[in-house]
Length: 184
Image (cartoon, rainbow, N blue to C red; front, side, top):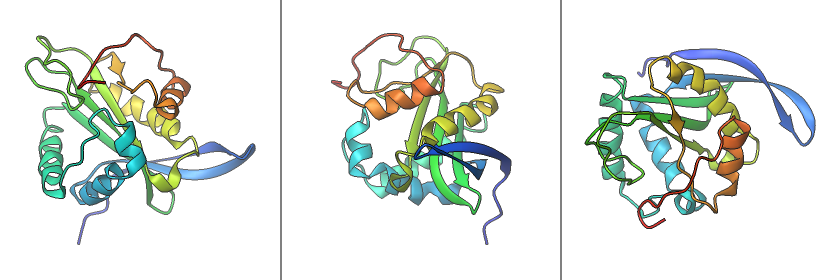
């Protein structure tokens, strides 16, 4: 048996085909049992192509990485949320990761020489793409993450990933510049 996840319930409005639908959503922290779901979403070809780190990785490597990230929640270096439909169907996730001096980031950038800010990552279930849920997940999770994660919140997005750019812009993010990471 797995304990029920803590859920921060709210109801929101979602635009779908130009019509307003009232849909119930829940936001909860990622749990260990989400690991294989996150792996499946991350292996989707569209997700791999949009990721800065687009090379494939094994389920074993992924499980070890998730275990490390789960441990990093304790010192409040990582906050990781799943957006669910009211019937507890996972639709997407947002991860906030504190930038720490000397620790390489997932996005492969230079190792920072000082602490500062938080990198933001998002992934929407392949089945839920195109429904503006990424923006919703960002907007709803940011307030929770902001209680423990330092500003600024920064997203690193490939220039050709227009869907992600639009998602972050709709959530209030603005382009600050360009830099090369991992050859991108």
